[in-house]
Image (cartoon, rainbow, N blue to C red; front, side, top):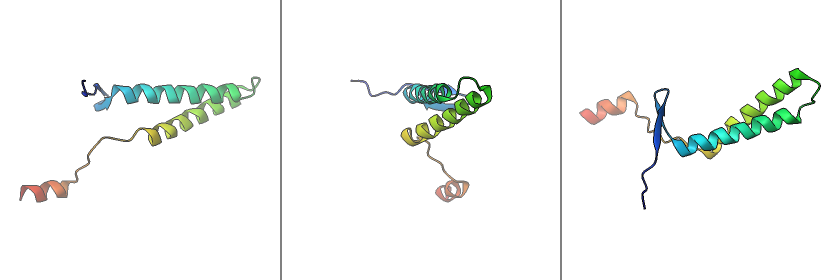
Length: 82
């Protein structure tokens, strides 16, 4: 069994491809769901609902997918060198 995770670099940031796909699916579903809930005769509300759905999808993704970064402050690096 291979536990190696597939990583990809996007815009200078390395991410796990599985989580990227999950977040794209969540954002797409929430955006399109909100868009179709808007009144069909009002283009402004369709846009607003779609944008609101995208924000909701982003928020859901941030709660489900945790960052894997380890942040080290400059003072910690200096203290480790001494």
